[in-house]
Amino acid sequence: MKHLTQIFAVLLITAILVSCGANGKKDKASEVAEMKAKIEKLRVQKDKTDEAIQKLQAELEKLDSSAVNQAKLRLVSVSPVATADFKHYIDLQGTVDAKNTSYIAPRGMGGLVKAIYVKEGQQVKKGQLLLKLDDAIMQQQVAAARQQLGGIKTQLAFAKNLYQRQKNLWDQGIGTEVQLITAKTNVETLENQLKSAEEQVKVAVEQLNTTNVMSDVDGIADVVNIRPGEQFTGMTAAGPQIKIVNKNSLKVVTNIPENYLTKVHKGSPVIISIPDAQKEFNVVISLISQSIDATQRGFIAEATIPSDPALKPNQTAIVRINDYNAPNAVVVPVNTVQNDETGKFVYLVNTRPGGKTVAVKQPVTAGEVYGNNMEIKTGLKAGDQLITEGFQNVYNGQTVSITSQQ
Image (tube, rainbow, N blue to C red):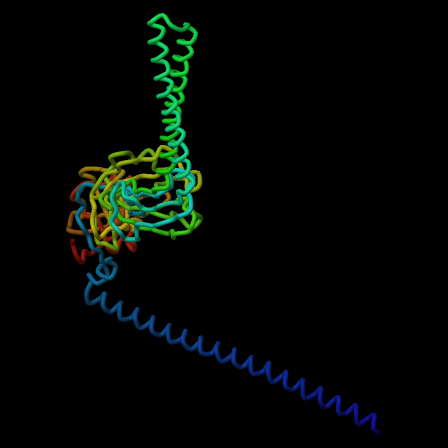
């Protein structure tokens, strides 16, 4: 009996699960059927609407025969083709730089800083003392060289006196020739030693002077990244320790892709804009590098610009290099030029006998493109009526209606 009860329980649970699954499928099926019914209803409404429109159109054509042609007209805007001086520019980004930027370095091996005589932002002159390096050893070397020089001078003075005495005795017939020659040789040897000692003093003094770090340009101390007690080498991994910038002579530097190598040369006109300073300059390329950068695959171009207090080194500049000119060229908006399997074309409007205005497909040969304008080499002439709006929806020979003429 207990076994039968367990069997009935299993059968009851199975029936409940089957019933739930059937209800789920039933709900989904009913939802699909409902959506299909709605779509069918909308189709019926559309058919009725289209039928009503066709009836009204037929009645309109009976009342006004011109309504058929008017319904098929495309509305377009036209503009007469004109000639203008077309210019093409290479648009690049550059940076402002000072032509006389100096990264101060020691004349010797560098050394420990004893004193600093310049601060960031300070105006400095060429030859002004900026740093004093440790010079204790150089001072000793100079003192030793001078002491040696003094000793040689004393010896030379004694040797000259001895030689003069020996010569006087020789003139009187006293003494030997060997004594005279020996005295003269001693004088000449000491004179040579004196010259060598004088050079050694000069070298020691020059080495001592290398502990004085001077500015080699006029300008402003833009970077002073050194303190007393630190080692001055001029350049570290963090950058220059002292940087002097002369803003009286500025330039803009840009990297030009190598494919423009034959189009850009020294003297090419360039328009330089400094957006942050709201400045614009019409200048020329003043320098072209003689090699291609292996990493960026380009070459460096520089253009000198006037000094201006609003400009600072490393400011961003917009560089537009004029690389192509076409005087009195036919120029059209680039968006009006379309393409097909035969090439580029535009649409013109033409008034035919009877006053009918139609769209005419006109093949063209395109030149350079810059901004929103395209140069047209052949296919158009000044005065042609170019479709500037609505050209996307017309075809060759289609009757059009001009809504506006620019």
